[in-house]
Image (cartoon, rainbow, N blue to C red):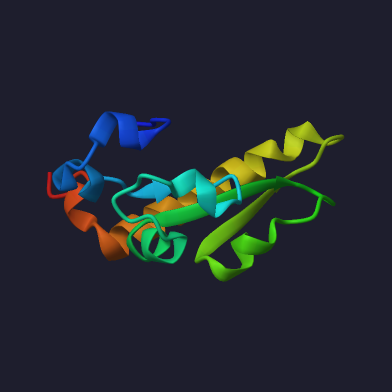
Length: 110
Protein backbone atom coordinates (compact mmCIF):
# COMPACT_ATOMS: atom_id res chain seq x y z
CA UNK A 1 0.00 0.00 0.00
CA UNK A 2 1.08 3.56 -0.67
CA UNK A 3 -0.20 6.12 1.82
CA UNK A 4 -0.54 9.67 0.53
CA UNK A 5 -1.99 12.97 1.60
CA UNK A 6 -3.62 15.38 -0.86
CA UNK A 7 -4.18 13.02 -3.81
CA UNK A 8 -5.39 15.87 -6.04
CA UNK A 9 -1.83 17.20 -6.18
CA UNK A 10 -0.35 13.78 -6.89
CA UNK A 11 -2.98 12.40 -9.30
CA UNK A 12 -4.58 15.44 -10.95
CA UNK A 13 -7.11 14.10 -13.47
CA UNK A 14 -5.28 10.82 -14.07
CA UNK A 15 -8.17 8.37 -13.77
CA UNK A 16 -5.83 5.38 -13.79
CA UNK A 17 -4.12 6.66 -10.64
CA UNK A 18 -7.46 7.47 -8.97
CA UNK A 19 -8.67 3.94 -9.72
CA UNK A 20 -5.76 2.62 -7.62
CA UNK A 21 -7.13 4.34 -4.51
CA UNK A 22 -8.50 1.58 -2.28
CA UNK A 23 -9.01 3.31 1.08
CA UNK A 24 -9.81 6.75 2.40
CA UNK A 25 -9.58 7.95 6.00
CA UNK A 26 -11.83 11.03 6.11
CA UNK A 27 -11.66 13.87 8.60
CA UNK A 28 -15.43 14.09 8.57
CA UNK A 29 -16.16 17.04 6.27
CA UNK A 30 -17.16 16.92 2.60
CA UNK A 31 -14.94 19.93 1.78
CA UNK A 32 -11.85 17.73 2.12
CA UNK A 33 -12.82 16.06 -1.18
CA UNK A 34 -12.81 19.29 -3.20
CA UNK A 35 -10.90 18.72 -6.44
CA UNK A 36 -11.13 14.93 -6.26
CA UNK A 37 -12.12 13.13 -9.44
CA UNK A 38 -15.22 11.97 -7.52
CA UNK A 39 -15.97 14.99 -5.31
CA UNK A 40 -19.07 13.55 -3.60
CA UNK A 41 -18.25 11.41 -0.55
CA UNK A 42 -21.09 9.02 -1.39
CA UNK A 43 -19.39 8.26 -4.72
CA UNK A 44 -15.94 7.99 -3.15
CA UNK A 45 -17.04 5.49 -0.52
CA UNK A 46 -18.89 3.38 -3.08
CA UNK A 47 -15.49 2.81 -4.76
CA UNK A 48 -13.15 2.81 -1.74
CA UNK A 49 -12.94 1.42 1.76
CA UNK A 50 -13.73 4.22 4.19
CA UNK A 51 -12.57 4.34 7.79
CA UNK A 52 -13.20 7.23 10.18
CA UNK A 53 -11.12 7.49 13.35
CA UNK A 54 -12.54 9.53 16.20
CA UNK A 55 -11.89 9.92 19.88
CA UNK A 56 -14.07 7.83 22.18
CA UNK A 57 -16.80 10.00 23.69
CA UNK A 58 -16.38 12.80 21.12
CA UNK A 59 -19.28 13.57 18.82
CA UNK A 60 -18.98 12.08 15.35
CA UNK A 61 -19.25 14.60 12.48
CA UNK A 62 -22.83 14.51 11.16
CA UNK A 63 -21.77 14.05 7.55
CA UNK A 64 -20.06 10.74 8.38
CA UNK A 65 -23.45 9.18 9.13
CA UNK A 66 -24.41 9.30 5.45
CA UNK A 67 -21.17 7.78 4.20
CA UNK A 68 -20.29 4.09 3.86
CA UNK A 69 -17.41 4.17 6.34
CA UNK A 70 -16.37 1.91 9.20
CA UNK A 71 -15.83 3.59 12.54
CA UNK A 72 -12.78 3.33 14.71
CA UNK A 73 -12.27 4.98 18.08
CA UNK A 74 -9.25 5.90 20.13
CA UNK A 75 -9.36 6.35 23.89
CA UNK A 76 -7.41 9.30 25.30
CA UNK A 77 -6.55 7.42 28.48
CA UNK A 78 -6.12 3.86 27.22
CA UNK A 79 -3.71 4.24 24.32
CA UNK A 80 -2.82 0.56 24.61
CA UNK A 81 -6.16 -0.10 22.93
CA UNK A 82 -5.06 1.72 19.76
CA UNK A 83 -4.08 -1.68 18.37
CA UNK A 84 -7.76 -2.68 18.35
CA UNK A 85 -8.58 0.22 16.03
CA UNK A 86 -5.44 -0.46 14.00
CA UNK A 87 -6.51 -4.10 13.52
CA UNK A 88 -10.07 -3.08 12.70
CA UNK A 89 -8.77 -0.85 9.90
CA UNK A 90 -6.43 -3.43 8.34
CA UNK A 91 -8.86 -6.35 8.70
CA UNK A 92 -11.65 -4.24 7.20
CA UNK A 93 -9.43 -3.18 4.30
CA UNK A 94 -8.35 -6.77 3.64
CA UNK A 95 -11.97 -7.89 3.54
CA UNK A 96 -12.98 -4.99 1.29
CA UNK A 97 -10.06 -5.66 -1.07
CA UNK A 98 -10.90 -9.36 -1.41
CA UNK A 99 -14.43 -8.44 -2.48
CA UNK A 100 -13.90 -5.29 -4.56
CA UNK A 101 -10.32 -5.18 -5.87
CA UNK A 102 -8.79 -8.65 -5.62
CA UNK A 103 -6.58 -7.90 -8.63
CA UNK A 104 -4.45 -5.67 -6.37
CA UNK A 105 -3.83 -8.40 -3.80
CA UNK A 106 -0.75 -10.63 -3.93
CA UNK A 107 -1.36 -13.98 -5.52
CA UNK A 108 -1.49 -16.93 -3.13
CA UNK A 109 -0.94 -19.55 -5.87
CA UNK A 110 2.67 -20.27 -4.91
